[in-house]
Length: 145
Image (cartoon, rainbow, N blue to C red; front, side, top):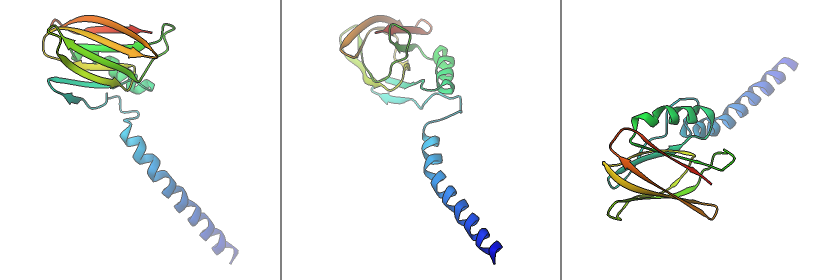
């Protein structure tokens, strides 16, 4: 009788643990952990972009993919600490907005048509600007706040 009670107790505990793990597994799958791949590209007009780099696996994947995109954006504080939630506006030489987004991570991969662009990044009350030319290999705009 004692063994039957213990068996039921362990079986109930195992079921409870399995049920508790399902939401965590589902959340982990949306975050791409340990996959070594950057987040999926998003589309806005003629631009495509992906931002990420939170966590070592994703950061390594984003940095490795920088060479495959015409423009990469990096965001950090002056002391080198990475930044996320940076407001970014990219304007063409004619002044049209090519891309406006909030960078959800310290690294953004951006695909734009060839041309000259002004990239403006704003965070914590500070604004930084870089001018880049897309179409001649990979370009990196490094923003330090």
